[in-house]
Image (cartoon, rainbow, N blue to C red; front, side, top):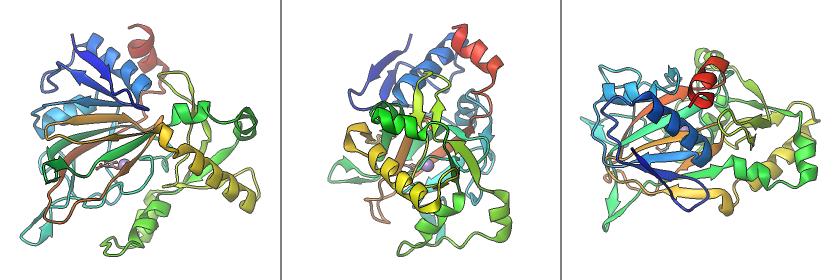
Length: 300
Ligand code: OGA
Ligand code: MN
């Protein structure tokens, strides 16, 4: 049986003794799902996967989503996206600046993101140290640490999340090659509204569900008051005590729970320090389904 070893930090655990190229038996998958709800991020070291094996592992968690402006896909497995700063014949082979600020994937869609699966094929190194960490923040802990008056204040409030907020922030960076979203791209990603407090479908604990990448306004409050509240919540949720940085090793498969965490990709490497990650983005299309919960969370 696999061994699950917490990092000792604000979140994260190593899962040892599993080869993800092999199909997972049901009891093992149920244990992983629970561990994801508890630890937020799971690392499976020393994997060797084909794109199809990465997809097959990922889709156990739910339906896989293609990104909106995500033109970089595995040629034969379109569910697998490519994140990379590598260029071949002058052309990028992957999305070079994915996730380089605090955010939660797919909070801007009606069906939220649930799990990201990233497989490290190349990790940039300098002086023997890996670069390009991914930092996470624990939103079960962030909610629990809110003063009771603030917990009461945000109960029942909703935030609007818009894909374009993050996109425009990235575009404003020097050297960005992102083009403004076309009207068709914007129409394909209309903003979504979600409660600020979410009951986590695995742990059952309350989660502070908002993020500076996409949350744009509070719908029940006057504009200025809503903005001030969002700024307060962003400052709270990004306190160092809720954070933990994953330092990559080639062959790592990392999965994380979008419903209970925020993340940020650290862009501390140069163009000639190559990073290549294969990614599947799994939506929360199954995890809130009572039949899925019954099968994987209650029965296990
Ligand atoms: C993502 C993302 C983080 C990274 O895949 O959603 O934000 O470290 N990437 O590449
Ligand atoms: Mn992301």
